[in-house]
Image (cartoon, rainbow, N blue to C red; front, side, top):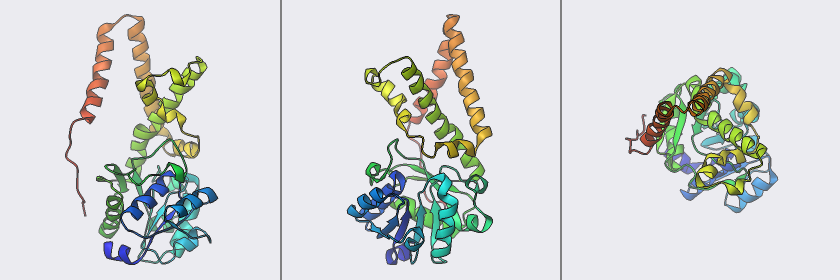
Length: 289
């Protein structure tokens, strides 16, 4: 896909933190980028960073490009994807970066779903807008790509994400992706939100938190934004994740109330060992196609 990308620009539709970071990273690698955002402020900031803004809108921005990256809120994916599919060249590859990938969760019709591929980078920020974007956001991250992609689509997705710095490309079904996100994205967000709300109710100022407390509650600063749509995308999986968290919190309360040091130590060690394993070097997977 690199020769085609060298001749034609990449369109980025939606220039917030994720889309803006894609645009910045591609620009840093010498790739021409055009784009559009519904936010005039994001458009202005992106233009100042070297992105060619197509003022006529998303559909016009997709004409004559090699790739299209849809980085719009979940509720807008279906409509914008239809526009992109209608306007982009037949050989152009269209991907979205939404936190959900099942076509039913995104309300994609069959024809549009067949043209648009989910590629979700496991990176982001609690801040929003182009001003929160940065060219190194995806350096070293993993990207979850829908397993239904054929070899050409895989090469295109890998070119795109490796160009912006991703280290690992994982292929899984849309259903498996949405189930995983319930545990590794949505549950942490809700946990931080609940902890932040509890501290606020207790009238504990955020400024009083130490480094650990600030780390644990960082996600509590996230605006609501598209979270309602994301949380509704895999309700059964998210309910199971929340139930597991509730059980563990209940076990901790019981262990403390009963002065059950052994039970407390068992829960503590289980968590410590799990987190320590993440710090060990692991073998990263290269391109699979």
